[in-house]
Length: 171
Image (cartoon, rainbow, N blue to C red; front, side):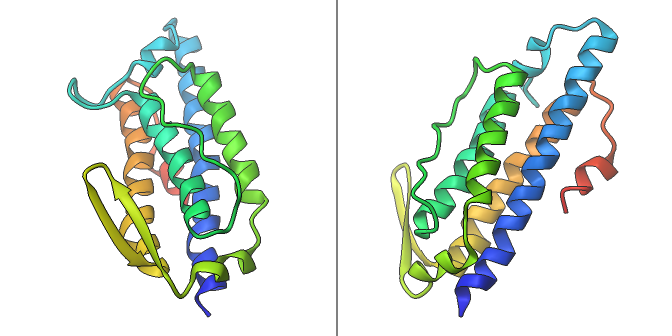
């Protein structure tokens, strides 16, 4: 019975990481206020010039978590589109909070609907199929965690004094 196992291997971790993301963003806001920076320093922040800014990474995490649930038939919610730029830190926090509400509405037993079949994932010009557990382990989970780590990294490179233990509190 993969359903409840799949739920336990994903939803609580997505939830904890998103709660953590709110803490990271709030720390960024506090730092901006204490140091006289406009919050656009954060919302325009990038790890390096040719990478996406902070809003992309936050909204990718929220999109990924909801899309994962939708792909497995565990929610009827539609993920909000990924936004590359133009969202304030408050708007990013609100988006994460909306995603947490979607996660809260998921029942572990809802995961049984797709546990036997393959999940088809379209990645631009590439389409792949994976059984549900492999999809979680090889695509949805790693993608989510990459972008969650980027949120931390972008805030750090902008100067926000975050500690590793704050990041690890997501686990």
